[in-house]
Picture 1 (cartoon, rainbow, N blue to C red):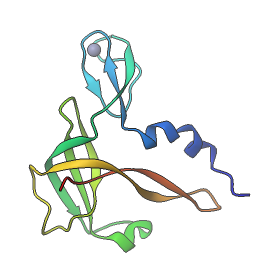
Picture 2 (picture 1 turned 90 degrees about the horizontal axis):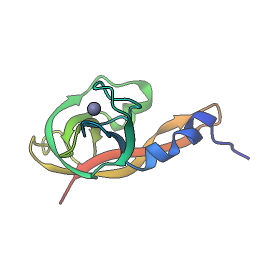
Picture 3 (picture 1 turned 120 degrees about the vertical axis):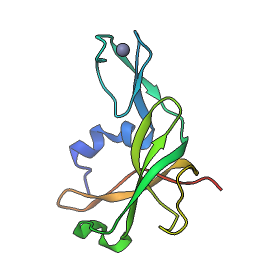
Picture 4 (picture 1 turned 90 degrees about the vertical axis):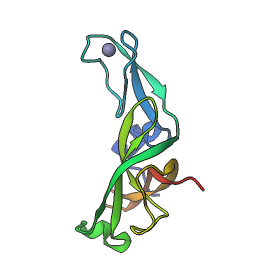
Length: 129
Ligand SMILES: [Zn+2]
């Protein structure tokens, strides 16, 4: 039996949903999740919009061994309206990707974890057609 490494199991909710934090005091939204806001307010969990706009991006050619088969990797800064985050952009070539395009969160293979090579999935972003 292949067992999921504990760290993967514990973080599953946050890998499979786009979850951030919202400050109960000032209303600021954060990703990744935080427990208390710099303003001193308590933060609560909030599900973030899955569609946003690509503000800018970088095409990365120097990648580690594990990512070599999908090189180059496109990494983008995404505006979700309530907050911004950095994520991998998939299903688009470096020639096709453009700042300003709309992107949506999708479930994709991220890598392997543990000695038994459990496949780990998480969220990436692809252009909205
Ligand atoms: Zn706050």
